[in-house]
Image (cartoon, rainbow over all chains, first blue to last red; front, side):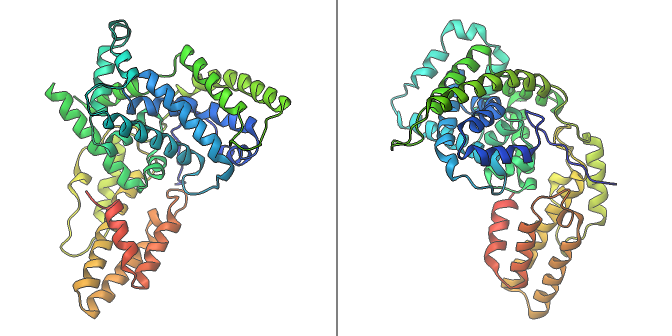
Length: 189
Length: 203
């Protein structure tokens, strides 16, 4: 039987196309704009799973693409290609933000986080969704990353492995552990 | 809660698309970024380049709506959990592991749903885990074994080169990496094997 791998991705464009575009984007801002368009939603969804509210995820998405735009002239095709490269930037942006928040030891959260808790916004959101996002955010960093890349960015295990520096099998194990833990916590509630 | 239900909720919670106003905000921010110099040095974007960027973003937004609609359609065209479990069990029955080693319990647990499973995913999972066991065995023999047991361990490790997971580029894009590990074992280099065990084989 001939082996076929079907890619799980937010868009239906083939990876090769993506890579050629990335190489062109090193010198062509228009190509970068297209790259942005292809991955904008996935990057946002990934960051949304990592952060406390929509506004912060949006802000970090902009930071991600700004960093990517500044760095792409030096981009070279390596393991995982442009997709892994881009999500590593997003991941670093989220990590930087988490560190920044942790430094605020007085217990006052980020300005945007407090905005997110206004009654008006809470009414607009599904309670179940907010609760689940909260539980995902409370997972260990690597497990949260795996779920965010899987369900937010819709990457395959191999692609996630390229982002987080693990093999496909190790990524699947990590993912299984994350699901099991999350299920346990949900069952307890 | 069943895995299917959990996956459905996760897809719904984490996969919610950008809202129109959010997309507009982000597009404007990124358009501004693209219109700025990449560095603080003397690079300047010409008016025509800025216009081209603006135009490409407009086109990209139109394309994005189309792609967004497409992306909601069956993103995971893979095998189901039952097929995965069957393939995994079949592979465990025929894949060798070191003497006294046992398969990780995770390989006998129910699968996590249907989202992950490409063709040969079950076999690949088993062969990856077996590789971890063999690398652990090889390392143990290098450190504690006899000349004969070290040679036997190396011979066993090198046989993995013929396994489907590590020889078929259609199901594994990391063949070169894996081959590098086998070459390290051949040359008696413990460092890459230790690193592999720490990174990819820890439970």
